[in-house]
Image (cartoon, rainbow, N blue to C red; front, side, top):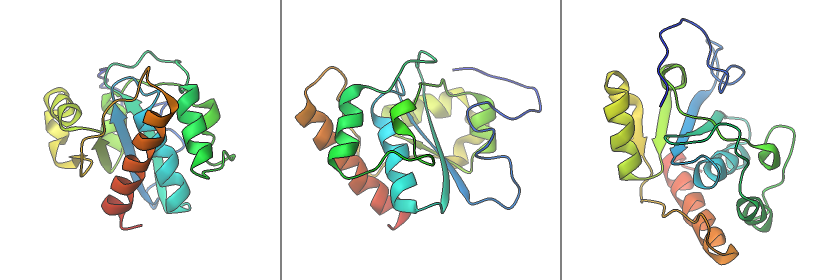
Length: 164
């Protein structure tokens, strides 16, 4: 996880979280930012219909890694279109950093272990760090059915968290 003390906008959320009268800004965080958190980002963008500013990141991400093909297929199978505003097909992984945590209103961990890692890394922001209502198991390197089931669970959790 990266830390920064400069007073600047994180590249991850530059266009997302830097306006003072903006909608609620949310960052979903998983491990590598190639499966669960980008799917959660796409789900909230789709269901929220512009009411939220959404990004995602990973606690151990390799910056620039692409979203897994199975995640893209799961999103398409669920009827979530890839659009200019929700361009999940071109998602690339980002590492969570202090600027993102500072500038977003809510940081949503995909599991309890992610939440603990975030609180340990950014204790000064503990009040804005939360977790999905249920832990979302990692589908990485598994089959399409696992990704589809993961997306169903993510969608259910996002609906419950944001009353959608």
